[in-house]
Length: 264
Image 1 (cartoon, rainbow, N blue to C red):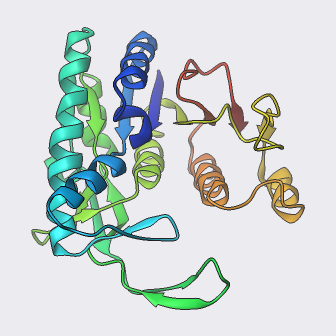
Image 2: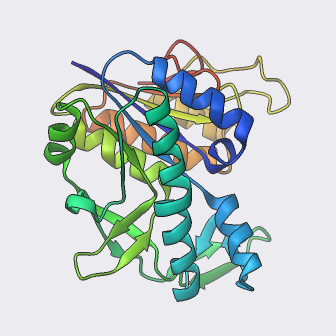
């Protein structure tokens, strides 16, 4: 049975017009499906209103105790439940989940990590309450999906010792796809603001139709693929190695599986 997993960034789900189109398009996808979302802009905005500074290093949020409270409220509450309610209005029987719910996804707190900064200098960074995933219970998710439920997963996991951990939504999507691959023919769609992986960042028509392990190495070597796109494609290739049938990187208004860059 085919299963479609769509990961959508916070920039899309936090804007009313793009959210409405995304949920309409998602509802139109045939067969079982899962939605994974971000919510970083809302977290930053609400944190600021509470006098809590947001610290980002290498595109990742440093999550101290105060920020953990904010992202738990925003990701697991405000953003997640808004999406669930809107999907119910579309006739989709959605269930909002964090990794802690039903022990679906467990992680461990990330150890301090040596990060190369924009100026080339290296710095040891403690990201705080950020989780690196250890396990995802695909069988538990499959049991929900087989009952006609559509999981809507927030970017939060837990460590099994009572602590919520902030976890990258791309990682959540990849781990979910790999865990469900033994049960379904899985297509994972990473949707964002561009039409796919581009040879020219200024030209939305310059989509690279297909990337595999060999072409990825060449694209990295010649600088066509760089920055944050590298870990996204690395996650996609790892998902393919672990049994996911296909990964598509595409624009948020083109999640029908027919557009974008196919990773295989």
